Image (cartoon, rainbow, N blue to C red; front, side, top):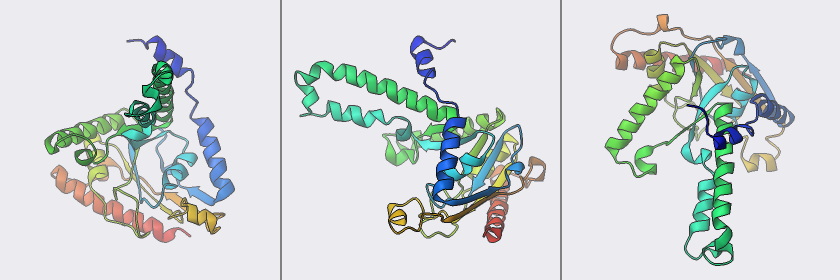
Length: 268
């Protein structure tokens, strides 16, 4: 099915990935002392899971700004629909847009916000982001059964992306570290690599913890802070542990955690 006229119009505003990538890399290099290595370990083609420790909001831009290939990231639904909160404000009881004369222009403003939001989403997806609902059982109206079904569908979608040749970046800790120390790994990245039959690539970042916070800029710590990121050698499917999926994923996760710790020990 061909794109509809609105889709075609929105596509005209999609910015090529190299533009934000260059801007991002330049900004990082102006502020921080960033050195990224090991990108030759990312396969030139085919799907792969790229994992890393998660220390700060900077982790993703540091990783994405240096990679030649597009890397797919998972993001909260709200990140891709910023216009929804603005439209809610327009529709709030007591909003001046509920009464004339502003009520007459509210539909136009809502439509304009929807178009801008759609263009924004198309750019994020084009650059490598994928919207999900994180912690669906708590952050939406889904019950636990529906949330479980959702995550099963999400896993299936991610496996399909990997089989289609995409590189999927996942942080096995599941969240950013609060202490700066490496947290325990969850098995999902390993399970996805096993299901898709693609390599899984360990990597690690050091020096970024808290360096995106305002206090780091106010204190001057952020400026020329030494941030090091390295990508290790991929673990190929032929080298994955064998046996039932759950057992194999657990063993592979333990191997990955050791690899990330080993990479961290070499970063300076």
